[in-house]
Picture (cartoon, rainbow, N blue to C red):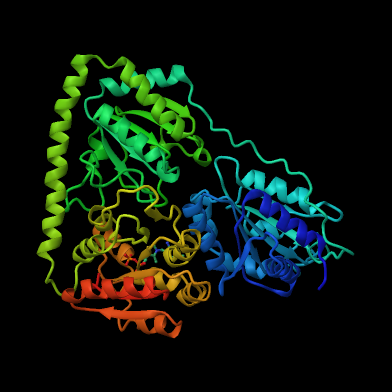
Length: 559
Ligand SMILES: Cc1ncc(C[n+]2csc(CCOP(=O)(O)OP(=O)(O)O)c2C)c(N)n1
């Protein structure tokens, strides 16, 4: 077997940074890397495990899921400019999801423009809008050094994707013998950024004096031990917590978890009615919410990433900006608040808690009753389905969620309480959940993984590719399709805002998704009767536990 020294250097750098998988789709160009990975694996040498994905969209989406479950940096190898193009919208999700991933591809083109039909002379320009850094290796540049720079940039907060275009002669470079030992590594500084105590003190004053404070968190739960810290803060302030579904940041069963009435539609009255917001690790959603907080609302913002690509949260500066790692800043803030709270204020806050707890219980009860009232509704309702899913899974099951129009229903009815048991996308590209579930299962082989998505998302997610890899690499997960036979989010939004009812975005005489699953050696079942949901969930979970990927196509009321 040939010895490709630069391919070996690449593996050594990946090993040093803890990269465990290489999600790839081949062209002839990356064969030396793939061959070297195989050789390392066959001879018992440490190497990332190669995971073949039959579509490049899945390479990066699986890496995204794998990062979210493992916290480890990721590597993706694709075929030159074509493979890079095929990654498509998965890259926007990785950008918004702050995924520390290196994507590398061969470059064969000239270094200058010849004419528009020439090979891509600037391959990185295809991804430049979405990565923290891209680089094209030039002759004689050391791939080992370039990779370290790339991985250091990817793994420096705020994390994000990087792209490396590597000339064929570098990737294919041969040596007489293997590397004796890895070169030295200079990794990026991973110390936690600490909050400034003087600013924390000011934030504590504002929050103590707030009458109707709201904590909003986006992805503070990315560090699992931040979850109990946030609970402690909420219970010190007795403030309600709104959490995104990107991570399990705060248990939705907690009395301080904010619930919305089931009928409020797209708006969020909690955001407009509060006098003070403590916002933690939160990005502007990809599709902006209709209304932000009022101009009088005080905003305290804790984030590792204050800049948000230059865009301010809700278009305004916070009153207090605390640039820090939330895992450190949250307990420090709780401490500062505890030191300042008088007995009198504590007693007042406890009174507030009683009211919030009663509101929570009322609304949670409303959601449950609504779901139960749908138990025999035909076609099946998303409420009843969500309620059944919640009952069928255990507390360690990891939900990988990209439901769109039923997102709020899922958030209120699928109970999650343990850190790390809820993962979702942050960007805007549909098709994330099924490939991400593959990556999650590879990172968490002992956990049950259940992905939730719409029928549109199932198809966007390249199900044949995701299910094939799931079966082949023995990483089985259950996919549940909230099949409303159309693009519900688009139709719902237009109906509400523009009174457009028929836009032709229905997927009637829908493809048979269960048969697609079966064709990929997965278990597949279609469910149309609400009474069949529980038996189908049981069967799907049993299939997954016995090692087979499974898909349940739950036909809901068409949108
Ligand atoms: C790659 C991509 N194409 C198109 C869109 C626009 N889009 C947003 S939501 C949506 C509908 C998704 O349908 P489905 O997954 O079935 O969920 P539903 O809206 O029905 O709940 C579309 C097409 C997008 N976000 N990403």
